[in-house]
Length: 213
Image (tube, rainbow, N blue to C red):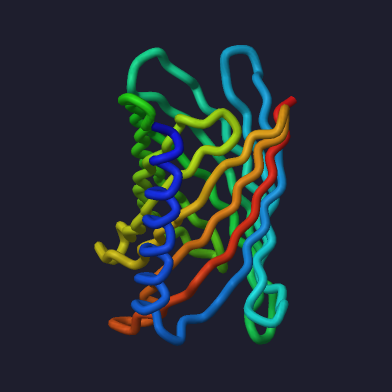
């Protein structure tokens, strides 16, 4: 049974990647790298990471550090809080952003699959302004294998101030578990409304590493 699943999974990945490449055409390309860790604090889960973003050609343009504290529950719904500090390059300066966050998770397992719905409310402070944003991420993970856990996720962003849908990000990737280290390899497609009615596509190649203390 396992031998028949692998070719089907590989075929699905190839089809999705080809479809994404055709759809975005001459999209921008970025590389994202994440490094962090996780541990238990009493009955809470603490996560942290630092991320660096590069444009095509290796141009470094964004860094953020994120901390989250989640409160696991035996029920399907759980909650968490977080904070992100971000620095992004503009033509004449680096802009700092300070972002407290609230999270709500819905988790459901069925067979070898695990489904998660994450709702995130962000309060973005930069340049003397406060921007309220809601993000919803849906993720489906296949957990049959011990070492490799392939997944697909999609996330949209919605600004409360303007009541507008502004971004959609779809990720196809896999977690690789090696003892206390969890690696994440992924390919993504994102579409942003950078200006009113002007939508921009980008392809993302990402890597991540998280150490469990």
